[in-house]
Length: 397
Image 1 (tube, rainbow, N blue to C red):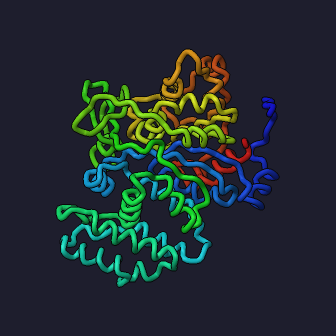
Image 2 (cartoon, rainbow, N blue to C red):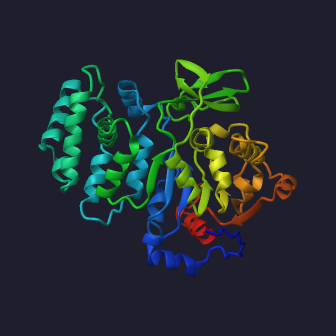
Image 3 (cartoon, helix red, strand yellow):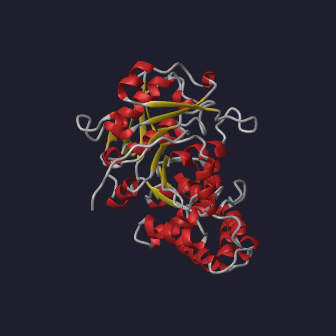
C-alpha cells in the first residue's frame, strides 16, 4: 500500500462539508479529543449531529467526589469522567435514552442514613424503584445485574452518600470484566446508542501530582482543580503521575496498543479547552502518547481556554503553548518535531480573552498557524460556543 502526503486549502467554516457530514454522520470524521471533566460536554452533545466516529481519550485520575470512594474501595481508575462523556455522546432521540440518562446521572441523597441508602440500592437491584422501572429492556436487565453485583461487592463500611448510580454500574462491570474498561464501555455504548468512542487514556490506578513555585507539592486531582478546595495561589511548575496520594514519587505509565491505534487513525487531533493541567496535560503524561501523535498525519489543533482556568494561575498564553509542546515531545525530544504534534492554534478574535500575548517569532519559527475566529457568542460568553467550535474542527477535516 502506498502512502502519499498532500496539502490542501480549507475554508472555515466550510458549510458544504458540514452539511455533508450532517447528512451521513455514521461516515463522519474521526476527530480525537484529549480531555476530561465537563468542558467538552456541549461539544460532545453537538458533534454527534455530524459524526458518530469522534474519539475521546479521558483522564482516569480524578481523586474527588464519589469517584474517590469507589477508587479507595476497589483500587480502580476513576470512572466519573468516562461516564459523563458516554452520556454526552448518547443519542437522546433513541427511545429510552432520556430515562437511561436520568438513571446514570442520579446521585443518592448526601444526607440520608446508610440504612436508607442500602434499602434504595436494594430497590434498584430488584426493580422496585421508579428510576429503574422507567428504563426499557435490555438496558434495564443490564443495570439491575450491575446493581446486584455492586451490592455484593461493597464492604459494610462503603459510604453510599452522594454516590452516582452511573459510576456504580460502571464500577460493577469493570470488576465483572476482569478489571478491563474496553468491554464494559463497548457493551454500554451499544445499549445506550453512544455516538462516539470513549476510552481512558490508560487503565491504571494512579494520581496526579504537581509542584508549585512556592516549593509545595500537591498530590490528588481534587486538590489541584479548585473545585473542592480553594484555588491555587502559586504557579504550577510541573505535573507527573504517582502511584497514590501517599506516595508522591513519579511512576511510569504507558498507553496500550489499542489506544495507540485510535490515535493513529485520527483525522484530526484536538487539544481542547478545559482544565489545562488536570485534563489536557494529564492525558499526555503516559508514555507513547507523544510518539503516537507524531506518527499520525493529520491536523493537530490547540484550543486555549477563554474565561478562567484556576490551574493556569500565573501562566501566559505563550507559556501554555510551550508547556503543551514540551509534554508532547517528552517521549523523544530529539526525534519529535513541532510540526509533527501541533499545526494550528484557534483563538477568539478578541485577544483580551487570553492572558498575555503570543510569541509570534516562536510560532513562525516552529511553523504553527494561528486561526482567529469569533469563538465566543452572546449565549456562551465568556466560554467558547460548542457549535461554533465544532464547525471549525469539522471544516479542517
